[in-house]
Each structure stands twice: as C-alpha cells, then as structure tokens.
Amino acid sequence: MNGAGASGTWSPIGLPPGGPTPLQVEPEELRAPIWMLGVALAAVAISAALLAATGDVANLVGYFLATVVTVLAVGLYRRTDSSRRSRPTYVVPQLAQTIPPHVIAWGCLIVGFGVAMIHVYRFAEAVARR
Image (cartoon, rainbow, N blue to C red; front, side, top):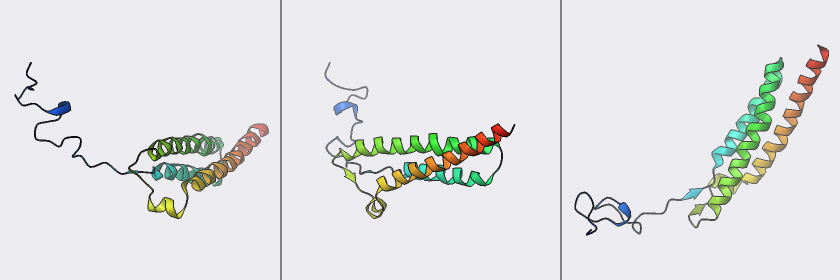
C-alpha cells in the first residue's frame, strides 16, 4: 500500500484532497444554549395560561408542561452549558451578560413549581367533587 486513496491521492485523516487540514479549520465559537431556557420559559408561560382554562385535560397538560418540560429543558441547558464552558472557544452571549442564565433557570423552576401546584390542587379538587 502506498497510502493512495481511491482517487490516487493521499489525504490526511480521510479528508478530501485539496480540502482544509485540521490546522487550517477555524474553531467554532461555542455559546450558551439560551434557546433551551427559552423552551423552559415557554413551557411555564403556556402552563400559566392554562390556569385560565377549565377541565382535567388543561390541568394535566399544564402540570406536565410546568414540571417535566421545564425540568428537562433546564437540566439539558445546565448539562450542555457546563460541557461547553470547559472548552477554550466558549463565548458568553450578550444576553447572558445582561441577565445571568442561572437566574432565568431558577426562576423557571420556582415559578413552574408554583404553577404546577395550582394545577395539582385544581385537579385534586375536581376529582374530589365527583
């Protein structure tokens, strides 16, 4: 074997011939995944809006959004952000410099818990009346 590929030219690490080598590739800037906190905020807002609706389905969907979706979104944000912070190309977004993301995350969790408890109370009250 002479190291030639199918086209007859050698390329390092399987890169196409004439393409950039790993040293020529610009490092990608890694940013905080703020959109995940946006998902958590949206879940809490929709759950709070469902407090105006009546019925068991509205209470169950509101509870699900305020607990499961919010906790998953905040948890994925924390996991992804902490793994990105360990890399040298991490850049703090402008929004994160204005409002710290951990404040938004804790706010979503606390408000989501409160909204979920209202949904649980309303659902339990409706079931007890039957």
